[in-house]
Image (cartoon, rainbow, N blue to C red; front, top):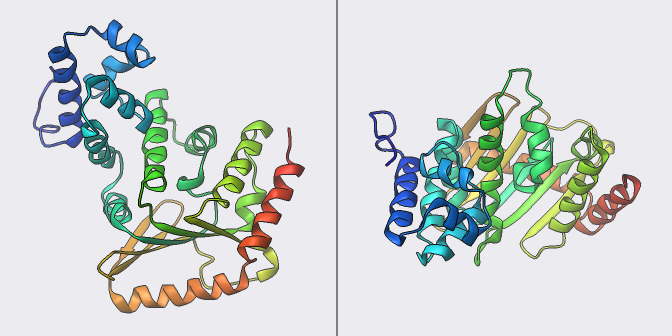
Length: 273
């Protein structure tokens, strides 16, 4: 069993780890047999059962199929992945998970659009040393957010990408090209609209960082401001309205979705490795 202590006994991640071990033992399968059934390494599966690693969505889907648990593990995973984030960002993610409309202005490629390889590059770029396990944990947590775009009733998403986000490549040309392709593909999906804010738009009121505006089914809304090292969640209606107006001004200054798609496609072609 996963060792229980005062620090993790109320953790959704601990509950998930315990359930993974319980299900395997109840099925009578060894780790080797489970690895063969799911095509995932037995050592990796063991680390999920001990709570040492946080998995990605496809892993949980594979385990749900293996155990016939009808999505239980995916639901537990959605809760467990919140443990990987700091308090303020965790609260933002709770709002994000319930939002029906998401609008964003991003000065770098947002996590919702990042490929796994690009996310790994970004998260490993910090001057603070990070272990391999910590890096993979952070990558899994970031990619886990993309689950909301794959739902049957996914939210309506509009992202205004600052041109600078599309001009600062990864060191590996192949990684950067794949990232641009991902953005171009996202722009073609029915529930995602992407607009590019060109350098020609000049100075504006949101130059200090990125912005998320989230609307819930009940009509309430929150704004999340994100800088390089900090974030602030705002739910006071007047403040949210002020940032919505700033966002609307950027949307008017940005290229149309059609022209933005053409802009991104040119970058895809220009950055072929």
